[in-house]
Length: 94
Image 1: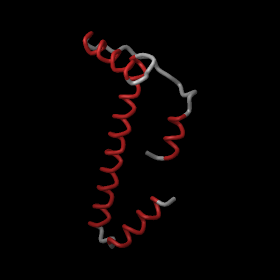
Image 2: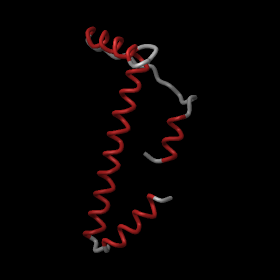
Image 3: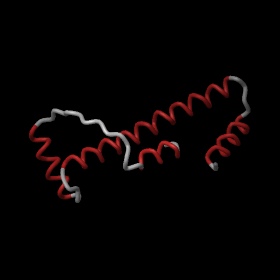
Image 4: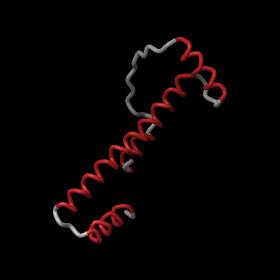
């Protein structure tokens, strides 16, 4: 995840949107039980944590897919692998 995006996500004063979510009653009971065992105050923060973890994982995969596709495109256009590695190294270290 990009640093700018991460900084925005850590801001406690981000705008919020309320949603309604229908889930089976037994799932809700499981969420409540697990939330207490994991030290959450209620099931809602646990759901937010689950969504956040999965979303970050999927966003990372999407970003990796984009980077992989970009590298493949550079290779098809004849860009030397050493040049690609050097450019990637510059990005990672900045």
